[in-house]
Amino acid sequence: EVQLVESGGGLVQPGGSLRLSCADSGFTFSTYWMSWVRQAPGKGLEWVAMVKQDGSEKYYVDSVKGRFTISRDNAKNSLYLQMNSLRAEDTAVYYCATGGGSGMGYWGPGTLVTVSS
Amino acid sequence: QAGLTQPPSVSKALRQTATLTCTGNSNNVGNQGAAWLQQHQGHPPKLLSYRNNNRPSGISERFSASRSGNTASLTITGLQPEDEADYYCSAWDSSLSAVVFGGGTKLTVL
Image (cartoon, rainbow over all chains, first blue to last red):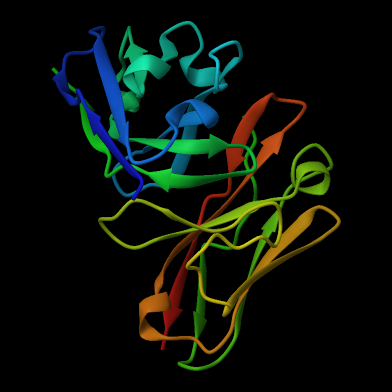
């Protein structure tokens, strides 16, 4: 069975950095586009970033361009999100998911990122 | 980045049919089609439909999706209490080179 598990969330001060990880088990990680999606408390879903199977293409929502970097390590079946210059508005539950524009099929349980002083 | 437009809430009676809509433009829904996700409170989303009307394995036939022009729709027949949830549409936007989501529709089953 497919299982995605995020880690790396926590409390960070404005301007700080965090690195989120997403580990896969149960399917062929390298065959999927992978995405990060976030959900602020009480709000809707917001797509953050997406990376192609081989890492050659990456896309970001405008609000995180230049601050966040998505990457993957297919040898480790892992997806990452490096988040720098964090702002209060980045506070959210961050999900990793398989796929992207045509639909995201499998989701992790999410990890909470809180940006606050 | 502009998102897709969904009605904030829909209420329908038990065993009735609900149709949820998602309006975009020719760069996203009208071109690439839409996906639909269901999210229960405190849980991650679950994919119900992708590329307009393809259901992943295990998704009930009570859920069906369609598209007309720039508007995608999700129809849920025979409403059950467990269908009460938030529903989101998403699509690839070729002009933005980004995935866009709708704001979500909260479905209440009366």
